[in-house]
Structure formats: C-alpha cells, structure tokens
Image 1 (spheres, one colour):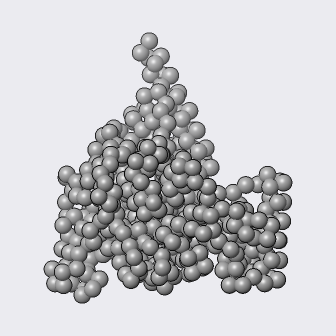
Image 2 (spheres, rainbow, N blue to C red):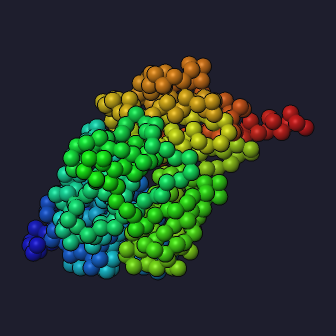
Image 3 (cartoon, rainbow, N blue to C red):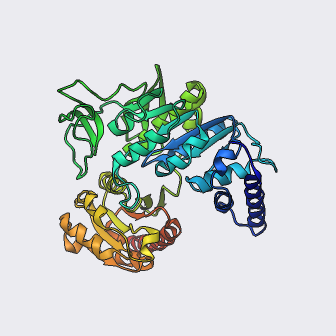
Length: 465
C-alpha cells in the first residue's frame, strides 16, 4: 500500500507521543501504535516492514515461546524488532515498528519477531506477511472472545498469507490442520512411559475425524485433545513430526530431541509438559529460521521461563511459587492445577483467577469454571486452598463440586488478605495462582507468604534449639 498524507500525520503524531512518554519515563506502552491506528486505520499496511518477519501465535504458550525465541536470537547476536514490551495486537505491533524506524518510517532492522494474538489475525497477518509462523496450539479460551475453536481456525485460515511457511503442533489436530495448502513442518512429543489413551480432563474438543466425521481412535491422549489419533473409517491420522522429543527425564529436566534428523540433548526450564512443548516449538522455529543445532543447543540450555509466568523462591525449608493460571482459560488453569497436583510434597494453594478487567465490574462469565479441572486439586497432596477475589464464592462452589472437603478450604473477597487464610506450618510449598494482568498483586501476596514462611522457619528453629 502506498503512503499518503494521513499515514505521515499518524506516523509523526505517534513518534511525538513516544517522545513524550519517554520524557515522562513511561515504558512498555502501546499508546503510540494506538494513536497511529486511530488516525490511520490501515497504518500497518502502509508502514514499511523489516525484510524478514517471524510470527508466533496460538492459544497457550505464545508469550513464553516468543520470549525464548527472542532470548535465543539475542544470545546468537541477532538484532531485531519485537513487541515484547507492548501488546500482541495491532497497537503493540505498530508501536514496535514505529520505535524501530527512522523519522520517515523506514525500518532500522532487517528482522522482526512478533507475538500475535490469534483473534487479531485479520488485522495483522495480511499486512505483516510473515515468512515463518509458529502456532503453539488451538484451545478454547475466553468465552467473550474465542471459546469456539472452529471460529478461531476460520480466522487463521482466512488471514494467513499463502506464502507463509508454518510450524505446527503435530499432537494437536486442530493446529495441525491450519491452512492445509501452505508449506509446513510439525513438532511433537513421542509417547512417553506411563502415558495412555484415556482423557482425564473435562474438555476434549476433538472427538471425531475432521474429514469424514467418524469417531477417532486415540493411541495417546496427553491432555484434552493433545495426543495421537487416527480415523478407522477414512485413514486420516495425526501427522508425523519432523521435530520431536524422543524422551524426557523430568527429574533432571533432560530431553532428547530429534531436530529434523539431528539428535540433540537439551535441558528444559521445568518439568511441566507444556514447557517441554514450548522448548520443542522454540527449537523447531529457530531451526526453520536457519540456526544449526550446534549453535542452537548452547543458547537454549540457558533459557528460563519468564518470572511473570512461573517462579520459585525457597524460604527456609519451604517454597513459595508464583504460577500464571490465565483466568477465563479453562485449559491453562487445568494445566496449572495438574502441575500443582504433580508437584512433590504437601502444598497450599492461593487462587485469585478473576479476569482483571471484569473483576472491576463483576461481570465475568463463570461458565469457564465448569470446564476447568478443579478435580486435580482434590488430592491428598493439596493440604489447603484459599480462593480470593470478586468471584470467591463461585470458585468455592466449584471446589465443593470437585469434592474438595470444606475443612481444606477458605475464601475471601479481599485478595490482599488471602495469605492470612493459609497456615504454612504443615506444607512444603505455597502456590499462588493469578491472572495475566495481576502480576503486581501476585508479587504483593508472595511477599506476605514469604514473611509467613520465614516466621514459621524461625519458630521451628527456636523450638529445635
């Protein structure tokens, strides 16, 4: 698209806005891009882009994978544009391009890495025309935006340019079927010891063959619809992966990977299956970008999960753990609950899962609670659960329906006092589960828990002496 007077007015206004924000020391804002799009709705189409663009989308994991890809490329010496400090919608992408452009909007860098919201694909992908696009997975998400997976698939199929090469999850039949005419490679995890073909989750959104409608036979169900399936009627089956995890040792966080025929050993940040997928998809995308395994493995060995997603701190003999749960997303919360169940020792859990913006007005749709596997928290290893926030009664009810005994629960509206419900004396770890936009609140609650654990440790030490 050609540039016009409206485009230049939007560009200069956005650059002026960015300068003002810098002078008042505000960082990580998408305001310049928001103004650019208000003043010129097709701004992204008219803005000149870097020569190579990599996109990362999907329901869950895209932020973590984007961070891992960016950290890896930085360690390898690449210089690029990214929207890490902004949003993954049009305003964030526009702000990133504006920030890394000359006065007249020419790109300063030849490479861009963008995390892209799947719901916003029609406003992003046709303009960006990425050479590579990774999709982590496709799940149901917020009831307000994308609770129906076929709706999201239609959006992606109608927005992805035909020239874009895809890196897709072979273990997700929804993801694997995106834009079938495009060139593609797949990543997946081989069946591991102890896995079976029985779904343990409430939600399994793929049950029938997408080609003929016959009921699928599952050789492996890892969780929800993630696994390996085949159709007994038409022969359709999960695709074979060029990038795969061959084996995984969760105790030592070691994985053996096959990167398109080259076998490598790699240490992953933590033992959760979703983070193994995150590491594998990162390796697959960077390999397709052209990074050889001998250069890739050393930098990936040093990667971690962002502290805004997961962090552990040891206080005395106990741990306090922040774990993002992504409110209104039943799949992400179910994965977090299963991680807690599988974590060793006795655990206490503090839940504040209300959507940050909806909680301000108490209009949140609570149906997602009944798609979420709260049953994972009904486990002998979970000693106590504190539910906090505007919807604490709804969470309490859902926990009762999951069979959690009343004496193992407490609930309160004021999240700032949720830690007061927890007695740390009888537990080995305290988990704090929070929504995407409440990391500041999560850190305040963490400090309260940390002080409680420290006081408990002092009492135990004094008693021993």
